[in-house]
Each structure stands twice: as structure tokens, then as C-alpha cells.
Image 1 (cartoon, rainbow, N blue to C red):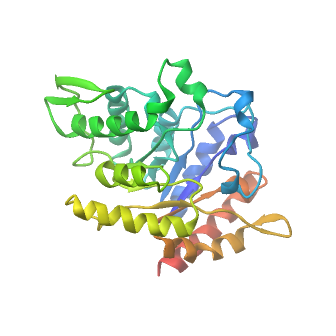
Image 2 (cartoon, rainbow, N blue to C red; image 1 turned 180 degrees about the vertical axis):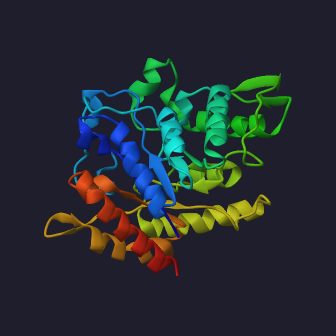
Length: 305
């Protein structure tokens, strides 16, 4: 089991300045955190925020509003790559359907080179229709668009010339060097629920699974179905990462780090190979961060033995 740091909104400790957060992420890297995952929002609409679907992941109300600063994830990961040496760089999740396949492939290949091959990207589709309306994209086809983008990226990363023909992405005999450092391309993890159609999408295309707000019993059942379908398709299931968010355990109405870390075996039993933990749930500010990191490392080592 590996540890993924979720640094969501740690910038609020520094008047929305992300640069001091880089120092804290670098500290976590040196102490042994295995990865870092950035969330993403592009546009905000006050009318949609009350429908936020992931409050259960923080064991409380959403942390942000329409004025909260959100930094673009690939740019931010590039800065993190420069101050870390070991961490896997990921997202939880990148809104892939809002990008073009060719540009996304180029950005991620560049990030893979800058980091020395440390990228494993999580894709999702988001829940805010305003993102898609602003770009003239069909909100209802966002899932199929995401799948095609993942397929097209894989082709661009492994073939030259590369060709791909889909409903949303089309190109013939193009070159987009360099290929990523990682042979075979960058791992693409899908952040989708365990519905029948999503299980098929994950089994056919994804290199890992990073679901949000899916109960652990459903994760366990869904993972078994994904792997069974992968085997039917002739895909190897021996190295299929599963990233699950640690939901804070409240003690006396307050998120308790010790109780939350003690809950890790339930996530491993459900199939997690990575557990992701948000510092903001347990740290009041930067002075609490090093102790938080140390406690997480101890728990990781205990439950990985």
C-alpha cells in the first residue's frame, strides 16, 4: 500500500500563495510520501455549488466556494516535479474531456520528462455543466469523449506516425515526439463510479482506478468485476492500481488523524493499492504539517508490512 498526499487548499494557509505549499510537498517527498494528487476545477457557478456531490469524502461540507482559487493542475504538477525526487505525480481528477487529446498528450509527456517518469494521471469528467457549456462541448457525451482522449493519448505516446479515428478525436499520420519516459505511455487512471458501462470503460482502456465517493463494499465488488472483464479482454490485472480517498473519521465531531489512519485496513481489504489523504482535514496550518506527515508514514509502514 502506498500513500498519496492530497494538498487541496493548503494555499489557504498562505493567503492563496501556492509557492510555500511546494516547500511542504517537498518535505513530504523527503520523508517518504509516495505520491501527490491535485484536484481540479476550471469554472465555478454559484448556482451549481449546492449540488456538490463529494462532501462525504471530507466528512463534512465542501471546503470551497465560487471565489476559491484553483490552480491549473498540469502547471502545478510541473512545479512540484521540480522540488521532488520520488513522488508519483497525479490528479484526483483531471477533467480530461475539457482538453484536446493532442495537447493533453503533449503536456503530460513533457511533465513525464521533467519528472523523470513519475506521472500517473487520474482522469474524470466532473459534475459542473458550466465547464462544458463554456467550451461548446456536449455535457452528455463527456464520458465517451474522455475514453477517446485516453485511447488517443496512448496511441500518440507509442506510435509515430500515429492515427486515431473516433467520434470526438480524429487524426492521421501525426508525430508528437518525444514519447513519455515511461515505456508504453503514461498510466491513465479512471475516476469513475462502478456502473456497468463504467466497468466496461475501465476494463477496456484504463491503467488503474481512482473512484470518488464510492462505498468500500461497492469498490470491492466493482474491482472484482473490472478485473474479470480485463481478463476476458486479455489484459494483465497483476499491476492495476486502485486509489481510494481516506474519509476522515470524526471523534467528538472533529476529524481525528489517528482514528482515520487506523481505518486503512478496510481500504486495503476493499482493494486499495494507494490511499489518498487530505492534509487540510487534519492540519490547522503549516505548523501541523510535519507531524501529520510523520504519522501518515508510520501508518503506511505498519499496514504495508
